[in-house]
Length: 159
Image (tube, rainbow, N blue to C red; front, side):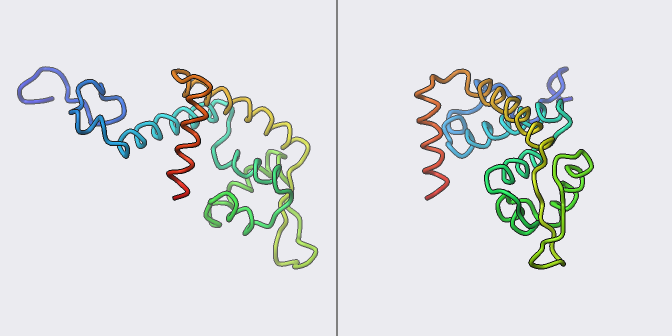
């Protein structure tokens, strides 16, 4: 509690009323991107958790779907997941029947990870969950504004 108020102090988080933020803060692109990112991350994580999934599960399934079977090192590069963390993600997906891990025929010390039919079905469901989350996140924007925002963000990130 604040010494001057009976109300508990509100932490400076994404939940703070933006109308109360100073103008110089409200107009900072970096801050707006961070707040939007936090909201998007929270929304996606909550929706995936409701499906007993995580963002990393989705990333691995998408990578395998788009690029085909891959080594664990290749998956680490394509998804941005650290190799040490990727092992547990693959273990979880394998236990659920979404991926299969087999020895690489060219190098038996490595494994090749493959998307299973069950994993492809799971990915379809998660694609729907994420599409719904994206639509909810971008609901205030028109289709043209969404496309413009995505293009602008891509430009900022590829600079």
